[in-house]
Image 1 (cartoon, one colour):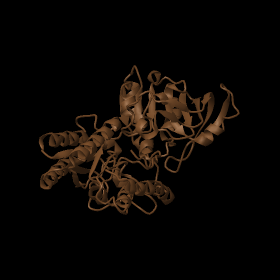
Image 2: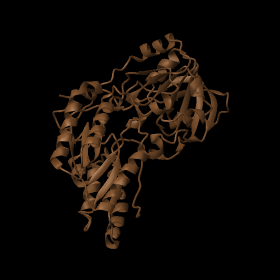
Image 3: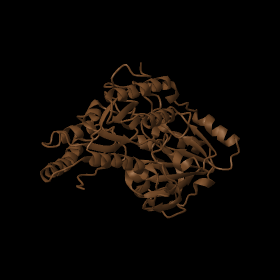
Image 4: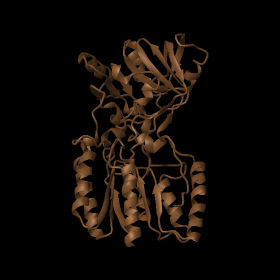
Length: 435
C-alpha cells in the first residue's frame, strides 16, 4: 500500500484553486513513483461534488490528471464516493469502479469502503477489469429530499431497485444511486446513476435507463413540505410531549455548507421566552466576548446573524459554562467519523441562557450529527422541550431516537429546499423543477 494524500474539510463554498493545486502536488509525485516501482491498482476516496474557483468538476480533474501520468492510463482505478456526488462524464469515463454510500444519513462509510476494496481485490485475483456506465436523470433534489431511512422516500425506493438489479443481473458488480448536491452551480448536477459491470454493456445501460425512468416518476416526491416555524412550534407545545420536539432548519444546514449562524429560529424562541428550548450557533466573536466572565455573570450579547435573517439576535445572556469544545463522538457509525474522525473540535465554546433558551455557542460550525455535542457541554438533550437543528437529513441518526416530534421548517438561507429559489448559471437545462 502506497498512501498518497488525504485532505478533508467541512462542507464549504467554492474551494480555492491553491488547495486543489496543493493536493495534486502531493498526489501526482506519489503516483509517478508508484509507476516506476510497479503498481497494480489505484484506490481513491472522493466526495464527488467539489467545485474550485476555476473547475466545476474537481474529482473529474483529479481522475484526468492521474490518467495522464505515463503508465497509469490503463491501471484499474477503484474507489468510494458520497451519495451527494454530482456525476460528471469524466468521473464515469475515467474510473473503472466507484462505489458510493447507500444510506443517508451516511452511516455506511466503512461498509462502502469495504465493498469497493473487495471489488478491487476481485480484480487483482481474476484480472477482469470492470467498467462503468451512467448518467444524470435531469432532476434536482435539495438535501431534505435525499434521505433513505423512510421506505416512502424516493431515494429509498431507488436504492431498493438498485439492489434488485445488482442481485438479479449477471456481470453487474455495483449499482450506485446519487442524490446530487443541488447547491453547486455546475453543468452536471442532480440525481444520477453509475452501474459497474464486467459483463454486457447494453444490459448495464438498460439498468441505468430503468433507474432514470423510476427517478422521473418519483421526481415530485423529492420536494419536502416545510412548515412555518411559528406554527410548528405551536404544534409541539400543544402536543404536550414527554421529550424534545425538533425544528429542523435545512436552509442553515451545516452539513450542506451553510454557516450555522442563522438567527431566525433563535429570535423566535427568545421572543416567545421558550423555556426548555435549545439551539447551537456558530459565532466565534460571541464566544470571545464572554472570555472575561465567570459562570453566572450576565452580559448583553449579539449572536450570529447575516443578510438572510436580518442580523444578529441581541439579548441579555447568563453564562452557564465555557469549554475548549472538544468531545468524542457517541456514535462511531456516524458520518462524522468518516468526515472528521471520532474526536470533534468545535473550537472554544460556551453555553449561555436567555429568556429560558439554552444557546450553545461554538467557534467552529459543527454539524448536528451526534448528541455528544450537547452532553459534552453539560446539556442533556433528552430533557429539552424544543431543539432547533441546523440540518436536513444527517441529524436523524442521532436525534430521531430521542425526538417525540419533528418538523422541517422554512427559513431564508442558502441551503434552501426549493432549487427554484437559487440563481443557476451553469446547470445543464432542461432540469426539473427549474423547467
